[in-house]
Length: 119
Image (cartoon, rainbow, N blue to C red; front, side, top):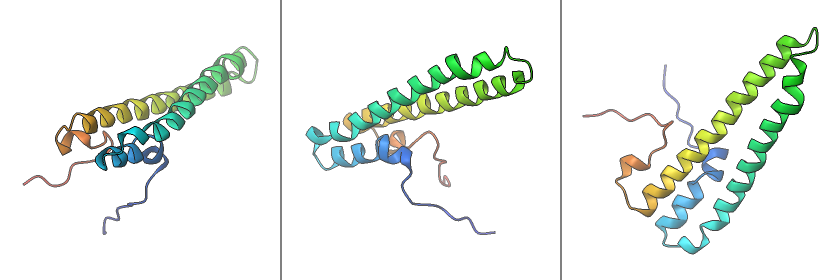
Protein backbone atom coordinates (compact mmCIF):
# COMPACT_ATOMS: atom_id res chain seq x y z
CA UNK A 1 0.00 0.00 0.00
CA UNK A 2 1.37 3.40 -0.98
CA UNK A 3 1.76 6.10 1.61
CA UNK A 4 -0.10 9.27 0.70
CA UNK A 5 1.08 12.48 2.31
CA UNK A 6 -1.31 15.35 2.59
CA UNK A 7 0.50 18.63 1.94
CA UNK A 8 -2.50 20.89 2.39
CA UNK A 9 -2.14 23.39 5.21
CA UNK A 10 -4.23 22.66 8.26
CA UNK A 11 -6.00 25.11 10.53
CA UNK A 12 -3.23 24.55 13.07
CA UNK A 13 -0.62 25.66 10.56
CA UNK A 14 -2.62 28.72 9.57
CA UNK A 15 -3.43 29.87 13.07
CA UNK A 16 -0.37 28.76 14.93
CA UNK A 17 2.70 29.74 13.10
CA UNK A 18 2.73 28.76 9.45
CA UNK A 19 2.24 32.35 8.36
CA UNK A 20 4.36 33.59 11.24
CA UNK A 21 7.33 31.45 10.14
CA UNK A 22 6.82 32.60 6.58
CA UNK A 23 6.79 36.28 7.54
CA UNK A 24 9.86 35.98 9.76
CA UNK A 25 11.82 34.13 7.09
CA UNK A 26 10.98 36.86 4.56
CA UNK A 27 12.23 39.57 6.93
CA UNK A 28 8.75 40.98 7.63
CA UNK A 29 8.79 40.62 11.42
CA UNK A 30 6.80 43.81 11.90
CA UNK A 31 3.75 42.14 10.30
CA UNK A 32 3.91 38.98 12.41
CA UNK A 33 1.39 40.34 14.92
CA UNK A 34 -1.26 40.15 12.16
CA UNK A 35 -1.23 36.35 12.42
CA UNK A 36 -0.41 36.13 16.13
CA UNK A 37 -3.34 38.30 17.23
CA UNK A 38 -6.11 36.11 15.73
CA UNK A 39 -4.45 32.99 17.13
CA UNK A 40 -4.43 34.53 20.62
CA UNK A 41 -8.08 35.54 20.28
CA UNK A 42 -9.18 32.11 19.05
CA UNK A 43 -7.10 30.38 21.73
CA UNK A 44 -8.45 32.47 24.60
CA UNK A 45 -12.08 32.20 23.48
CA UNK A 46 -11.78 28.44 22.90
CA UNK A 47 -10.22 27.80 26.31
CA UNK A 48 -12.73 30.06 28.05
CA UNK A 49 -15.68 28.40 26.33
CA UNK A 50 -14.33 24.95 27.14
CA UNK A 51 -13.82 25.66 30.82
CA UNK A 52 -17.20 27.36 31.15
CA UNK A 53 -18.90 24.47 29.33
CA UNK A 54 -17.41 22.00 31.77
CA UNK A 55 -18.27 24.16 34.78
CA UNK A 56 -21.79 25.25 33.81
CA UNK A 57 -23.11 22.51 31.51
CA UNK A 58 -21.28 19.18 31.66
CA UNK A 59 -20.35 18.88 35.34
CA UNK A 60 -23.88 19.67 36.60
CA UNK A 61 -25.13 16.79 34.42
CA UNK A 62 -23.23 14.37 36.65
CA UNK A 63 -25.65 15.05 39.52
CA UNK A 64 -28.80 14.40 37.46
CA UNK A 65 -30.10 10.82 37.43
CA UNK A 66 -29.87 9.23 34.00
CA UNK A 67 -27.31 11.75 32.71
CA UNK A 68 -24.32 10.88 34.89
CA UNK A 69 -22.47 9.04 32.11
CA UNK A 70 -23.16 11.82 29.61
CA UNK A 71 -21.86 14.44 32.03
CA UNK A 72 -18.62 12.57 32.69
CA UNK A 73 -18.12 11.70 29.02
CA UNK A 74 -18.63 15.30 27.89
CA UNK A 75 -16.30 16.54 30.65
CA UNK A 76 -13.53 14.15 29.62
CA UNK A 77 -13.91 14.93 25.91
CA UNK A 78 -13.85 18.67 26.53
CA UNK A 79 -10.78 18.28 28.74
CA UNK A 80 -9.01 16.43 25.91
CA UNK A 81 -9.99 19.22 23.51
CA UNK A 82 -8.64 21.87 25.90
CA UNK A 83 -5.37 19.93 26.25
CA UNK A 84 -5.11 19.84 22.45
CA UNK A 85 -5.54 23.60 22.19
CA UNK A 86 -2.85 24.14 24.84
CA UNK A 87 -0.53 21.76 22.97
CA UNK A 88 -1.03 23.67 19.72
CA UNK A 89 -0.30 27.01 21.40
CA UNK A 90 2.86 25.72 23.09
CA UNK A 91 4.04 24.18 19.82
CA UNK A 92 3.44 27.47 18.02
CA UNK A 93 5.39 29.44 20.62
CA UNK A 94 8.23 26.92 20.42
CA UNK A 95 8.32 27.28 16.62
CA UNK A 96 8.26 31.09 16.84
CA UNK A 97 11.18 31.09 19.25
CA UNK A 98 13.08 28.68 16.99
CA UNK A 99 12.54 30.90 13.95
CA UNK A 100 13.37 34.13 15.76
CA UNK A 101 16.55 32.75 17.31
CA UNK A 102 17.54 30.94 14.08
CA UNK A 103 17.78 27.49 15.65
CA UNK A 104 18.60 24.58 13.33
CA UNK A 105 15.81 23.32 11.08
CA UNK A 106 15.25 20.13 13.09
CA UNK A 107 14.12 22.20 16.10
CA UNK A 108 11.53 24.03 13.98
CA UNK A 109 9.61 20.90 13.07
CA UNK A 110 6.31 20.37 14.76
CA UNK A 111 6.02 17.90 17.61
CA UNK A 112 3.45 16.04 15.54
CA UNK A 113 5.69 15.53 12.49
CA UNK A 114 7.50 12.25 12.19
CA UNK A 115 11.16 12.33 11.15
CA UNK A 116 12.04 10.98 7.75
CA UNK A 117 14.41 8.06 7.27
CA UNK A 118 17.71 8.60 9.02
CA UNK A 119 20.79 7.53 7.09
